[in-house]
Each structure stands twice: as C-alpha cells, then as structure tokens.
Length: 341
Image 1 (cartoon, rainbow, N blue to C red):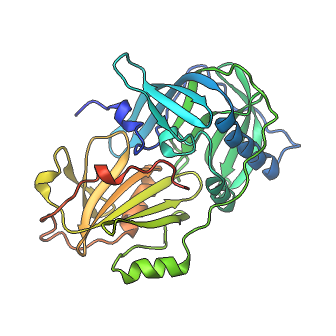
Image 2: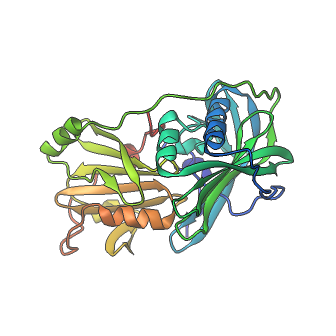
C-alpha cells in the first residue's frame, strides 16, 4: 500500500480528514438546560464568522474512514488570517497550500451559509454542554437525527468562537472521523463576531432540465438527505454535481466517454454498493465507473455507509464490456475549493 500524502490530500481538491482520538480533549458534560436549538445554530454561525476573521495558528490532526481499511490519520500545521487558511504537512519538505476554510480542503472550519442552512434543514442543531479542547473551555453543539442519534458534534472555543473540533458519526452511531486541534494559539481572541447569514440557492428546475436535455443523467438528490446544491457544466466536457446534507459533501463528476483501464494507474477494481467500481488507496473516499456512455467520478467527505448509498443511487449498467476506451483523468476535474460557491 502506498503511503498517504497529506500534502496532496489537503490540496484544493482534497476532502475533509478526521481523527479517532485526540490527546488532551475533554468529554462533553451535561447539557445546559437554558440552551436549545437556536443557541446551537447561533454558535455555529459565530464559529463560521470567527474562522474567517480571527488570526490563529496551530496543529490539526486529521483522520478519515477508508472502506475496508479502518481509519487513516495525519497531522498538519495550519494558520488562519484574512479569511484564508494555510495548511502544511508537518514535515520540513512540505509546501504550504492556501484554501478556503469553508471548503472540505479546509476541514469545513468556517461553514458557509449554505452549508449551515442545509444543516438546519436536516438535523436538530442544539447546544449540548461544555468541554475542553487543548485546555481551552469550549461550548459543545450537536447535530441530531430525528431518532435522537448524534450525527455530528462540534467544539466551539468559548473566548474566540473558533471551531476547535468536529466529529462526524455514521448511521450506526460509530465515529466516522473528526478533525481537531491538538495545538492552537489565538493571539487576540474575541467573541464580538457577527454570525454569518444568508443562503445559497440550489439549481433551479429550469437549469436541471436544460442539463438533462443535453444528455446528462443524474438524480436531483441522493439518499440520506443529500440535496443537490450545485450543478454546472464545465467547458461542455463534464458536469460537476455537489450534494450535501449540511455535514457531508459528496461531489460527482460526469464525463462523456468510456473508461480506459490502462490510464487508471494505481487504481483497482473493487465491489461497492453491489457494483464494480475503480478505487485506489487514498486519504479520501473516491470511486470511478462507467455507465451509458458516461464516466462517473465520486469524491466524498462522508461516512462510508452514506457514500455506499450515494454510489448505489447513481446510474450503473451491467459490467459486461464495462472498462473500455477513453478516460480523461479525474485529477483535472477536482479543482473546486468551496462547494457552496
């Protein structure tokens, strides 16, 4: 198995990484009875604003669930200033990369208004007590499913309102991953931040109809409340589709043509959700397959069970004669930075 490259993982196209356990983090304490849904969402809106206005430096540990391979983890140095997050692998040879803190590449440390709106639509967002991260007092916010299960937990710094830790859980309540500071310095913490507001409009029915009339085949939504927040044709060559429930992002790239197995160096065939797909050893969840004269590439920041359901819901065909002819390469497709732009 090839070693994981965190520098590559945290490039503009890379997705959120998450950690199983982080030394020095405290557990949640009993909820504050005076808090509620409005308080939890308000705290996350303040955290989103703080992530774009505060200056800070630190070390973040990432890990992500990989299908059939457990959790992969890594550590990066980060610094935030003027709404831009700079990330660098914790090694002398690593180069720094500047990313949007509201993108998966930035660990969703400053969620966009569109993502927070989707989160509020799909989950009960509540304040759930207090804890500590890196010795800093924090407010805990939970996103809960209709059955009361916790889908995600956030630690928001009490003094600065920066988001210090984010855990995501799958449908069975297992930790699918998290991203958390293990060292952090905030030179001028302040709580007087203006919460982010506004929303991101989903593609209109007219726009979706136009794309389908051009021969693109795609669903308007995916299982687990993954709604379509972006659909745009790039250079009439491929289609980008973005789906999210407010916590996870599943990006789908559709290209006209057929797969060329010889060009998929480092990839291997693997069954997923009852279908044969191409995958590779990576820090992210990804899959490629062909169907109906199109190639589908999935990149996801989401629990494995959610990605499996998404892959199953996308178009597939019989595998006979499946891997043939043209593949233009997924790498050039994934230059997106902010999924809700």
